[in-house]
Image (cartoon, rainbow, N blue to C red; front, top):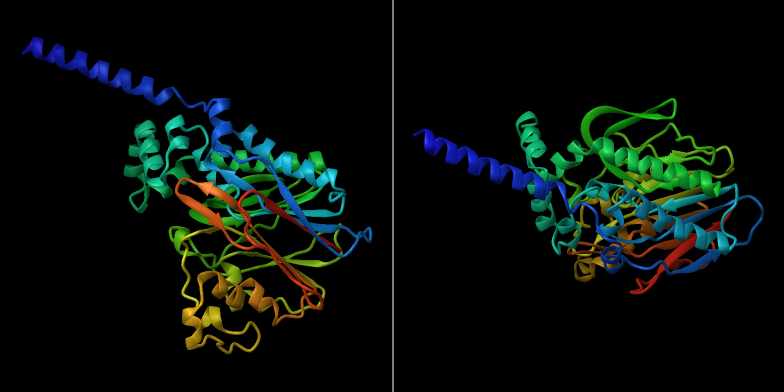
Length: 383
């Protein structure tokens, strides 16, 4: 019996030691691997109006993959390359508002994971590797947080400090180095609040939230929360009230911020009534994402609430329906001066990111930009 116990303990020791040796190594994606998994920076510039020395809004499509989140410095250098390109083309000044796409911070949940995660072809495979290599903390989380239903939720909670620090440090540095104000897309985290330029977790509720970073290194105290979730965001909590207005000291125009999902809903536009308002929407759209466009709360007019969905609309493509009933279609009913919507591009595991970015004006030709395989857009509007 003693001998059996010794053998069992010996093999248990070997198994446990081997596991921790495996789990603790291979967490650094080599440079040649990263170069194979990422996209080069190449942009086309679309600009409206001219420089009146009043500032500008610059919305940047970023083309990213999971590999860009393997290290914080890789993420920073990728976004730095976009801003250097903009700077070289005279699109940055002290009154510039730079807008990045939605969920640009959420993939930081992958930070510090094993090489196998970044090489995975499917998200489900990547999550399995994450569970295996973080098994002890994952199991502890499972016992301590019975209410969580998915592995995704657990990892956003487990790595909340890491995600928040990576996101905030990256965009704080970018805003200071380039001397611009940045609407940093969004990030999924437990609800945050900003106190004395420091973040604190206000609750354990996961929310899609957007932050604004100022040129002096400060974080704008107001956080913008998404109210209406898309189908792939179903495990986030909806914010009860949508507040869109952003008033900055260095920009005279009133800016209204909307996530791509909120931009579908007519109620999101109820407070955007001024002719001086500019609507800015940061977007994220997986290729197979589907929306029920026939819902009255989506298909109704922003002012008046009358549904405009017709039987003939059922034969339209998802792309055509989005243009008719979402941001582009809603803009035609408003008195706003301009509207800019920008989407993230690239690929995360099996998900291609699509969505047509747009630059809209009340009285002139509007640019609804085609999706291009090898390049992304910078959309610029001189104020």
